[in-house]
Length: 229
Length: 229
Image (cartoon, rainbow over all chains, first blue to last red):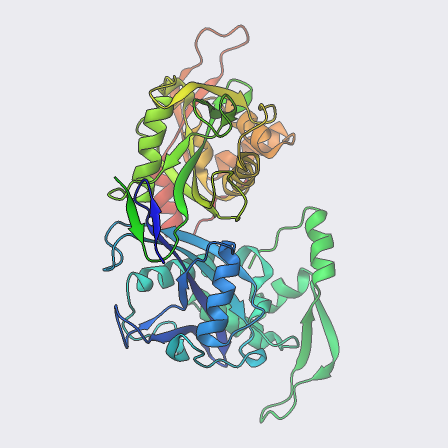
């Protein structure tokens, strides 16, 4: 089979930057490429867009095929189209990013990749194509968004302690946050439910668990509330 | 000439949402299509990406060709790839948006469009393809950005009165702003230079002119300052 057009067309791919939090570290999901170019090299999961699927459908399909990751909320990040970004010729890629609760998902290479694994975002192997700059753009977007939208909760277990939440923000924003100010700020927003439960199986004194109340948050936003950390 | 590929490829286009302020109104630059599909219909300026140009280069070229608008700062908005968005077949488009000082630019249809003209954003003719939803997305982005980044100044004359600035924000945000609070807020940021000049040729009492001081703003941002209206 072959396909003929009157004018030349770039090839179109999607790539996914998937972030997760593992205890103390912000991680990104990478695959080891099974094919040339960059065979054996680590890369963002992704691949060619098929004619009968939308762009987010292509991204979701590639994530499943290459990493086993399913039912992930993807958001479009940016489209990369530099003329020289792919040795195979002109390839334009639409990048997506996602935040996942690592505990909810098992990853492993499926059909199209040699391996799939989580890496600390500040300590990844050298990446194929321009994937390093896509990763950096996704990190920048995450840093920006996490301050103005309550997306950080998507990375934490559904029930979390205020220390875990503070740690998440410190990790993403790459700076220390004052414990007392952070607690005051987040509790004053009134978007967390304090649960009648405490942490289990911890060496230190078990801390209170909280849960993000999305319904309350949406109500506040309608009333003009601005989330800001 | 024709071009043959092993797998089918979507066609790739760029489209531009260019905003300007004309006195009281927020406007968008549209072109009247000279060719099918949607011949004679109004649309966002745009067209096919060539193999030897980057995506922003394609957007800039199309703007010049279709509207005469040159030297515009374009920012990527979103990529639209719904399977059915173009009657010609699968066409994926990378949308850009730009803010221009209307007084600095003259527009007029160049080679590829029948006409080019500014329309009030809340009163456009019916648009080709999915361009209405691209325009709405650009408006949403503009509304969001204008509150957190000093981009509004790009729409105003270099020297402006505080009333003009307030009016700009009211127009984009679609709500009234309290005159006294607005002035207090914007002046307290210390990013405007008060000039030794007043408005000319006005019927009312001539108001003081101001200029955005980008150098000062960048210095403040480095020190942790957050612009917010």
